[in-house]
Length: 200
Image: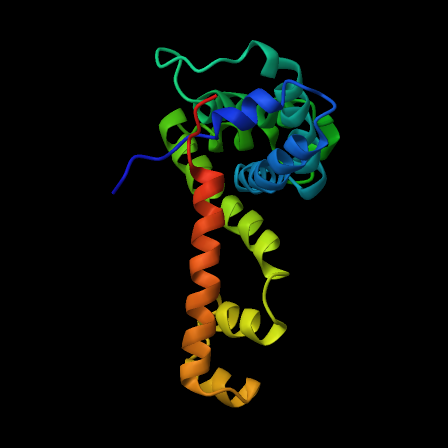
């Protein structure tokens, strides 16, 4: 299995320009949902998770100018792991005491999130790959007819048997396999573009 690839260096360089809306949109499309899911998994409510996500995005915007690729310091996502963990910890400790009395004990949640950085980084890597797939899917979907996309998504992502989709979409099984192949090929191309480490 190939080693996990870090965020494209060219994207991180582009983020240094606060007016580069495309770069920030791409970063947000990939990272915002990922950070939110990690925060929820670490015990935050939906609203606290959104606050923590916003704080992480703010921290990235403030620190991105000083970030540089350095093997001794680790990858961008290793740094992001620490930022996420700190944001979640801060969100938990900021909770009003009376909320903890309703069964939401901040100390217990903090102890429960005593997850080591390697495990959190692994979770972030998994979530990153899911987010990249979702971002690629959003970009690619409009390139295909609705039936082709539904044939791919239902059979490859949702696990619906090809025979069932053949009846539902009034397509032959061969046409469904062909549509799936075209969509998967394009998705792999866009996903690889998003995953590939580029030279800055």
